[in-house]
Image 1 (cartoon, rainbow, N blue to C red):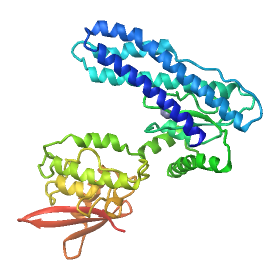
Image 2 (spheres, rainbow, N blue to C red):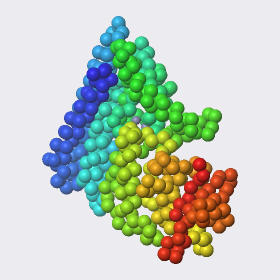
Image 3 (cartoon, rainbow, N blue to C red):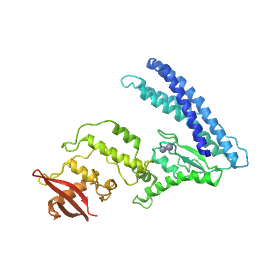
Image 4 (spheres, rainbow, N blue to C red):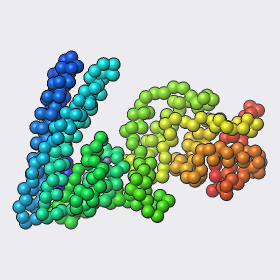
Length: 397
Ligand SMILES: [Zn+2]
Ligand SMILES: [Zn+2]
């Protein structure tokens, strides 16, 4: 096991023990009247966090000293940092809101308290490492390292820089450590061998390549960090979150009744599964997952033209049954040509209407072709049971 994993394991283990201690309290006392339970939690949780925070802090201190001693020929004493108990009390009071009244939700309160306990316990460990780095005369470089299910774009960007930080200021620490859903760790660059150093950097390289990829897509010579983070967030999909959405069965249909919610969700799950298999870390680049809800049939579609129903409109935009999917970001689904990023839904509706009205017939009269804003647009039209319908809209390759 490399030395960074050693730190992570020890911190995770202590946070886990703290969570188990909270669960114990919960089992024993959660049936008390809300006010009494809240008072008890306000008394016991700070003490619990203090204990486990000290354990996390001293494990981190020991880790820092040992790891450092293995590379450098000098003594250094880490100072164990402790959790900020006022902050813990404030958070517990806030989460305790879910114990009372109409919005009483014991499970929710438990989940929040559990997150608070673990965050503050790990905070003590991380503060110990940060404090050591700051005071260490060897001035080690260090990195912000993501753990587990990180979803924050700023953390991702800071982590992608690897071992370059010398001070907290250069690390952009205006972005808080340990914010909601963040379990980043500060790790000093004490590597034992070339091999281990390489191993550490594999993950950073992976992130940094994503950073470069994201950056190259922004149409600006000097994109700001905020622009990069926003584009990076757009390039990520949170599989767990989408799966949670999809686990709730939905009935109903589009307003025109041509596309069932259930079929849409099933189709979306197929696409999600493909993405997850190909891009397990959630970085999908310019590919897009179809939106949570299908598009409605365009409201402004002229009534004298062949009709454009929700079913075919969604087919053209997002694809289904091995065809369609021509909106920017969706061509990958069926390997079909895409419109550009600048071609919005509004543009597509207007362009399709124009071509349906004035286009040149090709392939008999099954398809119409026209040029809109320099783009050759094709519209397929079919007559079924005497009714003319648009069946797809796509750019010419
Ligand atoms: Zn973050
Ligand atoms: Zn983070």
